[in-house]
Amino acid sequence: MKAEKIIKREDGSRVRIITSLRDSYANKPIYESIVHICGKGKRTWTGTYSDGDFSFRRLSMDERKVFINEKNLEYVTEQELHDAKLELWESIKPEIRISATPSP
Image (cartoon, rainbow, N blue to C red):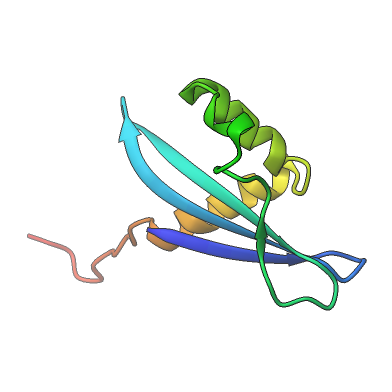
């Protein structure tokens, strides 16, 4: 499941946050957020990092997670990432239906 949120900045640039629910581990959901940027007056979205760069490829998996998080935080705040995750959660949370007739 994925959710996309686009935030327009005051300078005219835009930031797109794509949040997905990957899996859960020990009853805790694991969210993944991908951030893209688009300059003022542009239509092309660009990632915040290049995964083909040698400096990225030589990192361990844990170091990559830290690197990606740091790069994302250069363009979005923790609160904006949290809000994107909440929007995804709101879209998939189950509805509670209460019956109007009492059961015997």
